[in-house]
Amino acid sequence: MNRKVLLVEPNYKNKYPPMGLMKLATYYRMVGDDVRFYKGDMRLLAVELICEDLINHLNIIRPNIFWKSYYPILFNFIKLGRYSFLDGDEIFKEEDVLNAIKEYRKKYIDKDYFANPRFDKVGITTLFTFYWDRTIDTINFAKQLCKSQEDVMVGGIMSSLLADEVYAATGIKPFVGLLNHKGDIDKDNDLIIDELPLDYSILEEIDYIYPAHNAYFAYMTRGCVNKCRFCAVPKLEPQYCDYIGLKDKLEYTKQRFGEQKDLLLLDNNVLASKCYDKIIDEIVECDFGVGATYCTPNEYEIMIKNLRDSYNDRAYVRKAIKIYRYIIDNLQDESEKRDLYIKLEEKHCLNFYTATKEVILELDEHVKPLYAKIFKPTHKKRIVDFNQGIDSRLITSENMTKLAEVNIYPLRIAFDHWSLKDIYEQSVRTAVKSGIKNLSNYLLYNFEDKPEELYYRLRMNVDLCEELGASIYSFPMKYHPINDKEFFMNRDYIGKHWNRKFIRAVQAVLNSTKGKIGKGVEFFEEAFGKDVEEFMKILWMPETFIIYRRMYDADLRKRLADRYKNHSPNDCNLANEWWGKFNALSKEKQDKAKAIIALNKFHEGEYVCDDDEIEELLKYYKTTRNDAEN
Image (cartoon, rainbow, N blue to C red; front, side, top):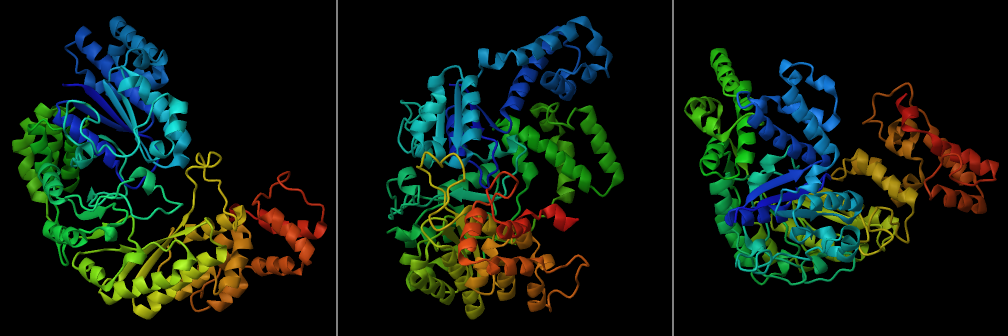
């Protein structure tokens, strides 16, 4: 077919690579198309496209000049239009050259990339609804890069949940759910895209590094048998699928892209599968059983193989440059290092925009033995992570004993509300008894729970760690409605038992704990309080006092004197002073003060207060981080 395909992930931060786009990349390559992946500022992609056209044009009018070496200068001039970029070289004073550069700068200003789109297919993924604005802007930009809007595909979580809203904002009708039918893209093609292996090569095309990398990403089941009101899975994956094969996909990935260290499975409820034992057996068969290790692959050989196979030249030319720089940085012999640098410079292989596949392959005979000198394979423990968690209500001694056959780390168990406390506690005890001692859980809050119930759940985990000798990391997760038109574009939703101050207080504590709470009673009590009463005090506490509690809270310093042996001369007792004034208010005044504090807005004009005693209390909330740091 040889279509030009652009796959786009909006420029938001995310932990995991876009699996949907990676499957689409595999599909389009299998049918012979030219695939390009982009994540970043879409305006910079436009600069790239115009700059590439300019270089092609300059190669025609002045073929004796290696124009690719001028790529950074031309890129910056097209982007910003500053003639100072052109001052460093006489070639830019040549009339035909300068006129061409001006012409392509004008093409950028006039948005020629929209007027003359170059892509036959454009696919855009979407993630969370609170990335609404950024995602819609990306779709509206990327769709204009496609020759026909009928060939623009939008899919993923946000667009599946808010399909009508996305259509209204972009004019593109999203694909809802999974690409799990024949002919989802090309009617005459029987490939089922959702069942294809991932194309890991597209991750080499971008500068963004996903926090979760060096892993096989997969599903072995789809959907969930539960229909929890706060969960999007029933809409995203409405049909529960008991089993999806893993072995062939991992083998394909290993052969094409190299061995990956870990196995990250995004199943939503694997314990509900009738094929559960088969799933665990297959994971063990794929070399993720207890004690399994990973040996780092030879990335140089993988890069060369894919270039020889013409598999995503754009990605592996970039990869080659990274490897060359790694070799230069790590070679011990200075003469070898110098000779390699000179050779790469002569062959224009110090930068991705000047290097070519042909020259990289030509250099292989010289570079391969140098890489072999510094490449030292290492063995590391492998882990299996059912990242979306498992259902505590379905945990039994039998399935936990079976799960203990793989390198599960950590075992994630949801603890979404306090009413599950007995079931949750028993599930933890069962897992630990089966030999699984590294656990983690998600704690949903701001839904229908009360603040104190979050404290009870956190406390239970800390106490279970102490009693069972286990390690349980808790990750409180703020509930965010996905179908409420008032809130799906933002993170402003406040549950009926919560307020803005409480939400912000929990976030302030989590910032100091890096978003998680592990074992250690003293650490937990410092962060969240020694009991639920102190926890509620922290929720009402001025934010700066929470973040710098050691500085502001003399009682805390006294209680944890063994840990706080060194103090700053700035340490004070303002937290206790504030608390005294807070409790000195009459019931009526305290209720009025709480109503103001709950809004978490303390700048002049943001609240109304006609009581001097309350206003005196509110002064503490105006203490800033700069006050503490100074």
